[in-house]
View 1: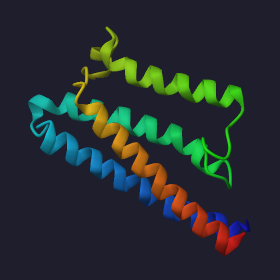
View 2 (view 1 turned 120 degrees about the horizontal axis):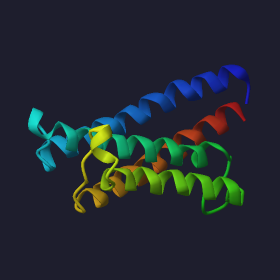
View 3 (view 1 turned 60 degrees about the vertical axis):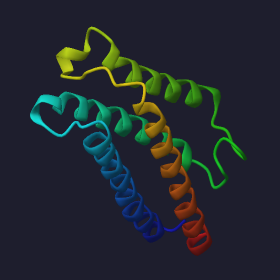
Length: 137
């Protein structure tokens, strides 16, 4: 991919990430009623976990021309480290360290929403990636 193509790809991928941040905001605000100062910790925790997981999973989405996890797997160390980062990120709000970061445990009902957001993010990113590969080879 030429340098101009890479820049254009990144200009598109950045706003795609923002779409899913906004989706997370909407879920936290409307579904979990984290819409007041009293619930700001819950809102921030939901955003923290979604942001960390989405930016970790994107590593797998853009590392290959193929479909990640179906047509192509990363090396064992990459899989292990990204899995570890994701598990630690999910676990932090449930630890005694969470209050130091002003995080709070997330309700179990949050996780189906999170999974849906992440899967949709991956699908859209894969679609955009395929379009750019076709255009810029």
